Image 1 (cartoon, rainbow, N blue to C red):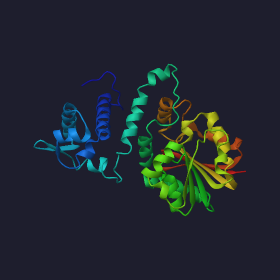
Image 2 (image 1 turned 30 degrees about the horizontal axis):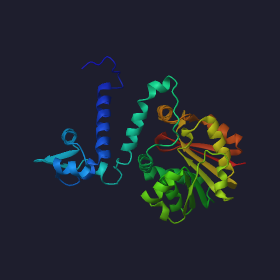
Image 3 (image 1 turned 90 degrees about the vertical axis):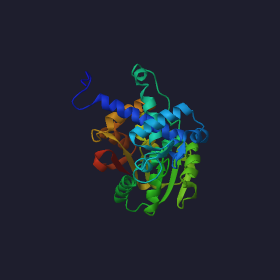
Length: 326
């Protein structure tokens, strides 16, 4: 088929088909279908179990069968071997934590025509805390360990770390595994969720603290406690340039003498994903964007940091920026 809008490097027909598959899989996951058919079940049983519409169940299950994610035996359905590691088993191939968040992203992107015309986005925190936290928790351990190793190679004498906006605690855990004590600071609703869902409330050498680091004077929440490292992972892209400058100044107030700030994010001009991720921030935030190296250096220098270093992480997808108090 000759598509008039098909370019040499982008197949619009295939992209559309893939988008429909993603929405179908995400919908089935959120509706509880995959979990419900971990063992064989027929439609009447499924209808009662997940409180679903019979017609919808039949159409969706048959479509999932056609894609190979569900097997059908007589009139009963069961998740396929191919789908189990994706949606049930929490191993390296598991995408069940990220997929609901991806649906939320796609929904926001559908508002881009209005945003381009000037409609403002005011959400700075995810509406679906569960989906967002599970998406953040799906970040590969290997990547997190790479980030933490680079931080500790720069600040070898570090004994404690503040993980600002640390969500599910992936980085805090990694720092603790390397012998540090950690404080994870995030919004109250996030802390309430992750303390139970991810078992952070019972972790040794981890303290959970509720608050909003966008508020002036949030440093007072720490009652004079200072840190060797203030870590900011995937935060700066949520906020405007002015907000980031202020946040970095406030973070400096929480560092010990000789302390280090560490910022992990997608840096324009270095990450191949930065420009497209900027669109994601356009769709989700009031002033967020991805920022270039010169902008980070300006914020850090104005806040009193020096010895700034920017390194490319795995395959340059994101960067780690470290700097020390002057």
